[in-house]
Length: 156
Image 1 (tube, one colour):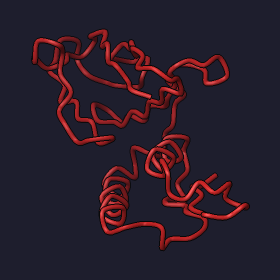
Image 2: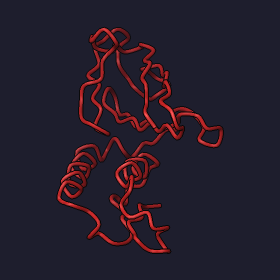
Image 3: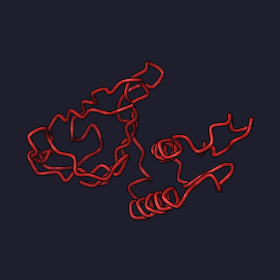
């Protein structure tokens, strides 16, 4: 599908608003033609170019993982939090989207349903790459474990 960057009628005068979110979900849907940008690249500033380079590096590092997409959860047509999971063994990427006006909870089992092959009870290193890079932990600060039911709040 790709991401539009345009300040004209063809691009709905969207400019570069929320292009990063669109890029991440385009990747999550399974677009291996990454990045697929359409329109006026001059709308991107230096920070945008740095972000694009970091996402390109993440894709290259995880290329083999990104070959096996799985619809993981939710239905956007029912206004649910939805997303995709890509796992190979104990390593993977999860893409989640909240298309609502308020933050909502995502509940998921960290195991085979996502394609994650981790021993039940083994510590998982969960890292968010977007919207900010940070370690994701339980509410008490401890690591998630294989087989845990994770509850995460997603902002719109």
